[in-house]
Length: 445
Image 1 (cartoon, rainbow, N blue to C red):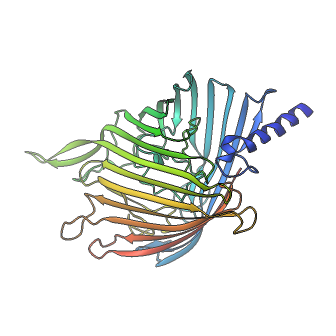
Image 2 (cartoon, rainbow, N blue to C red):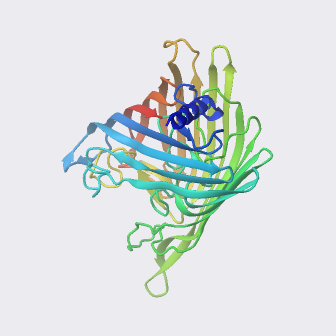
């Protein structure tokens, strides 16, 4: 029994003082609970669990309903994420990972039957096995996985994002042909010098799109073609770990990182629509073809004071077929009023998006010995073929976020206050902007 306890203590110590722990900006919490199963710690399993709780004031889009009543604004509390992750390496060549949890539960949505907020479905996020084929050059795995293409942020970790959250369009097929940004398939990943790569071939999930069809492209419910994706990332400074697919949003000055990346996703006949024919209408299939390119910088500025800068920029070129557009509202507080209810806006579609974010980690000692403040800002500019005013002109989708992280113990315990300036597209010819103020409390172990 004493030997078992000793191994657990040693494992937690390795977790706290290893490179991955320092990458989170804390030597107290570490990157999870790492328990060795042999004397030297080369065989182990690691447990990570976290909650992200949002308290939010939201000025709703025009005509939004909550429980059947018109709601101009809402003040609510919700679970953005509640997760549990376990992975193990009993052999240096083999890895198994299990990740499950819930997302987006508030008092009116996210529930088991999706008509209230109660008893949300606990579901599998990731479940894969991996084999190291040839050193660091090639590992291959299979299962329900998150080794995505397109961009760095399409592979984002949700534990250490610079801003309050990801912008969502970085996961362009979320909950349509994938399962919360995951797919069932086979992947390969590795490092060749300073080039980090990941590629995958997946089966698309059966889409929840109804059989109804129109002249606007939508996800094809009869899609049986493979999904091909990849992301290639050249690392000019320190190299990042690719043991797991989750890419860090900000290292809080613990690494010197400058990367340039590019990626893609392609699914033949992933969309469908109808078009006029000689007799009546005919079904026309279109491909999903998505590209992304990005740059990521994370640098310590002053070692003594602990200041650091983080910056990220991305360009997305999305083709989902004719005039496809999808409106999304994170943890939407409204239950009725159409696709643009609550805090939803046109987030994904055929067109292009430019996105950027930047943050600055202020010097130590401003908020006590441990706490750190990291102000940030983010901005997205999208132009979609299917978002037009009454005159037929494209109306750009512009979203501004300004906020700050109060890092109580690195990313392991933090508060994030975020102000969002969000467009209300109820009438694209008379665009209005709505405020959204969110306080996030997050702890992960």
